[in-house]
Image (cartoon, rainbow, N blue to C red):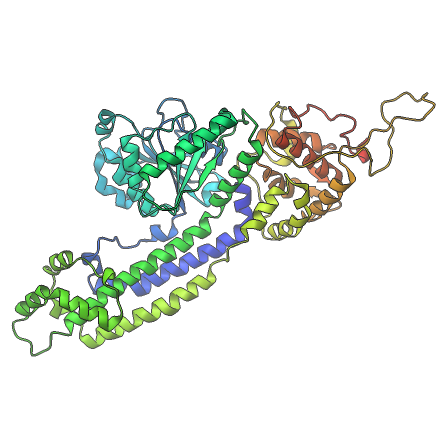
Amino acid sequence: VSAAMKADHKDFKKTMTAIDQLKTFYMEKVLPLEKKYWFGSFHTVNTLTDAYFDSLPMVLLLGQYSVGKTSFIRYLLERDHPGLRVGPEPTTDRFVAVMHGKDDRTIPGNAAVIAADKPFRGLEKYGLDFLNKFECCETDCEILKKISLIDTPGVLAGAKQVKNRGYDMSSITEWFADRCDRILVLFDAHKLDISDEMKGVMSALKGHHNKVRIVLNKADTITSKQLMRVYGALMWSLGRVIDSPESLRVYVGTFWERPMQKRQFSEFMAEERLDLLEEIRRLPQHSSLRKVNNLVRRCRYFKVHLAILKHLRSQFSMMTMFKESKQKELMKGLISEFKKIGTDNGIPAKDFPSLTRFRQRMEGHQLWKLPKIDQMKIDFENLEKMLAYDIAGIMKNLPTSNNFQEKKAAAASLSSPSSIASTASYTSQRQRGANNNSALSGMASPSSLAATAPTKTANGSSFLQGSSPQNPFGAAPATSSSTNPFGPVQNPWVVNEQMFQKCKGLFSTLKPVNGKVAGKNAKEMLMKSGLSMQQLREIWKLSDIDKDGQLDVEEFSLAMYLIDGVRRGKMQSIPSALSPEMVPPSKR
């Protein structure tokens, strides 16, 4: 994820530029009008701050205890953050915001909510009991430069434990759900029961189902027959607590750094993992669209508010006597006034505020003290122009969505020989937009991978459908007796001609210099395999035969062959050394 996000650096910068324009638009044009016409007094919305616009997209993780929420965060970060602890018992007893920082540190909740650069000020209303169970952890990790993660306490089962929390889990979940860009609800394949508190948490997600993704974790620990039954039971349970006509997207797999235990669905689970990571990678762009959408929605509410005040203010003139009595009269006939406003301005009835609430809020204000009606008409027209032109201009500056199918094809190029050639142009395009310093934080640089000791793990799918006995580079002598009257025994290379040509085309997109690709350029391509860092280290050690931290086309083809063997399960383990037929012809 980190490497892919670095490759999207240009799009990320473009997104941040659009967000800066959005912030300037709100602060300089919309906010002065909101203050001028009492918008904050009539609507329960906080003034948007710099922290709101500058904050990174957030991913909220929910689930009962020991379903793998904290392990999933460690899997994404590829390291531990301050205070991280994983275990079968409920280890996370607090809300933890995992964010980027130059140094590892933990900020207590009371300090985090008043920090000007943190988007958590709204949590103050939940009191000290909650703030004592909230903290912000900062760590220097590449992925946290693009997103923030919110870890949560495990949802409890018993009423007594819930009562002792000291805060309302559902209310706080609703607060975070409104501000997060993706909500991951994790379930353990061995624990599908949904407690009363879990029902409350799921109910708090109402209105945010477009953000929710279900993760069926630890699915590699059960058989295929059990997985079919578990999946059906999960969907049945979700149907009882989620009020939505559409079923939610469910990712099935195992999301931690350990290899899969049962490999009957290893190819499917590897694809599920790639799909989920791709969603997370695209969140910065999704977040910018969400902020634009939220601001447009806010402006439309303000437009209705201004239309109401403009109409009511027009009922007053310099000659109006007994202004307070006139205002009371207008409040009594507010239903008919709303109908007139809706007809004159084309506003649907559902967009109007509650009559009772509007009357209550109006008690502290005097309509005749608003600006003159001519000025209000000018402000109303300016607001409509801003919605029509300013927002449209900001939308044009947002990066266009990259073709998702091309990205999936690029990722699949490590598991399907037929897709390698078709993804060459995509890879070239991605490399042109990549940051030259692209690297996955927590993973040693490719040039140092050879020093890592091998481990015997395997999971995954197919890159190589079979090998041909034909050696594309001609015969090479092997370990046979020179006295053999029929000549030396030939050891054909495991990479056949067809696969080598496809790997060669893919290799050319990685911008080789003097016939070799630097480790930082090859890393992103190899990471798309979905293998663990340990497995990729071992594969690099075997493939970088001359130990120069670079790969030539033969070494690159060998790496692809080894990756596929591991993913498909053709290799029970990664070999500790290359067999004679694995060694590229030019290296023998």
